[in-house]
Figure 1: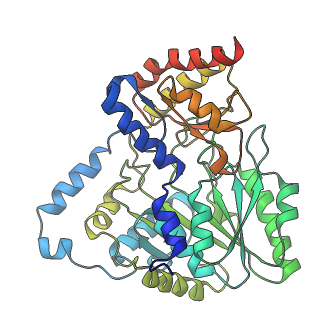
Figure 2: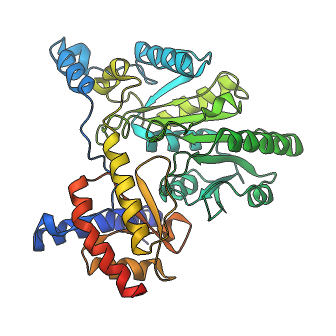
Length: 397
């Protein structure tokens, strides 16, 4: 009999496919040099944090260290939560308060807390493929069933016929990630209106609330003026917003974000207290104090995302010219590219021969593609283009 949890052992002994590729890249860099490896594996922002981050942190650390580094309230500093509420109200015309927010250690903590807060016996959570692979880990660990529904392949928008077929009396929630990792797709206001109508009909049919869990680390990362990212609580009451500052402020290693339980959500107080209870049970109380206190001064700020737009446009134009099928992303910093053979993992292995590190899509629930993270230097992208062209010629001649 093993002395450890077999489920936890399997999760710990085998990293995610993304992390495995990232570790391979580090070994390859040691062998042939950083300039010869084109690592597109990890969604790690390459643009520095905006000046407000450095300036605010500098001011904070010159103050009282006992107060600065001490515990906040379990759900987060009241002043920070009030600042988040004020910003959301001004930006989206809502009526949220500090008592609707729970500060977290990034989006992963937000998601795991939210899922555990909602979990009941026999419940199911729908994910829209392609989706971030850890969703399945978070859902199953919360004791619920993960149900995959594929988006439309031509544009990675919601396939409402498939979604309608998946809804049933056990559906507790659906995770929405827009802008999306890995496709970069943004769900339009019309799409969110249709989704809200479908879910309200399902709630009436099955006699229970169905929540949207809005995973929003990429909310501000859109590049064209005509692209609108809907604020989902304005369309659907039963929404939990899971936000992270990791991508907008280029702070992935600092792990700071929040959960918003909008006041119109069904049984709001019960849901909020369940969020607090799940945070307690999972050990996610009192998010890092220093970075909580940085948040108010930096709300609404972003890193220089024009770099990502330049990278997107450069890659889209070049890869399309080489013969790759690319659906132009509206946001985030990923390209979802059709592999040049049915087996995406085999394609990824052939890419490695050119020191191109791209993530096969099987773990994203949408086989036959690879994800390219373009949150890298523009210079690296330019240097990688001959390798992408050579790889295409192996397949297309």
